[in-house]
Image (cartoon, rainbow, N blue to C red):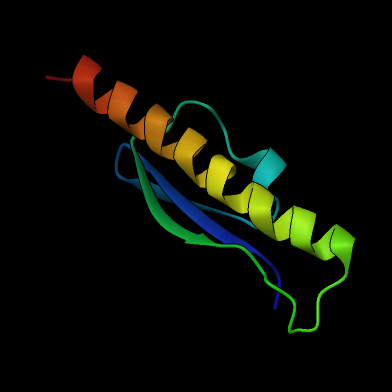
Amino acid sequence: MPHRFVVRKGIHLHTFERYEDIPDDFDHLIEFLPEIPPPPHTDQQHEEIEAWESRFKRLMEIEHARSRKTR
């Protein structure tokens, strides 16, 4: 299963399979489903898995900043 990221901008939902394709100007993060390979994991896979937390936090910061502007 590929990654699945869904954001809402205005009334439209946009779906992405690559994190790098998610724009910096969206209203809400709807779905954040990175593909996590089944164990056992290699060291490289562990690094990739650990990176998802900071990526999620970055998207939430964008959402929170955007919601503060619209108040």
